[in-house]
Image (cartoon, rainbow, N blue to C red):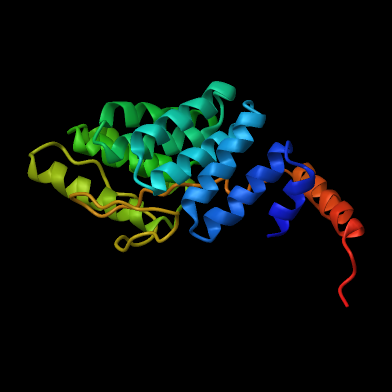
Length: 231
């Protein structure tokens, strides 16, 4: 209600529309959140983060094709935006478009070298294509980046066992820590022939720009200063 009150006096402020979308999405009001985000990008088509958030909401609602378009719109504004590359990969992987998903994950780790989730999902997609050596290296990269990544360790253990059964020369397992169990992070997950999380690593709250918050606060102060005092 606060953001809607602010928007009555600032209807052309894209960041306030985007902030309203964040609140609505957190409340599970996805259709309303989508409308707020779309109004934001209509007012500011260069807003990379909000294009990405449009994709997140669409994917949450099950509209994968539109979600991929939204992620690509984000990347058109900023080709280095690793989160959008990753989210695009998750969306494509959910449709079994593995080659495209792998390409998206490679782009994600190119622009964020420590992106453990992208390495893990890349490994899963590579394994599904039968590229076991590459999958092993991807899982190892995930573990090097996040040593306590139980999901990646479990996936590595399973692909090494699969490689051994196929008669290939197995590569040694990661040396540190124990394997087994699955990670619990991320906003969404999918399950395949082996366990793994495919998380939408978000920008819904973590990347709200400080200036946008300050502008929203100032706008709210102006509204409240004009509002009558309650009796």
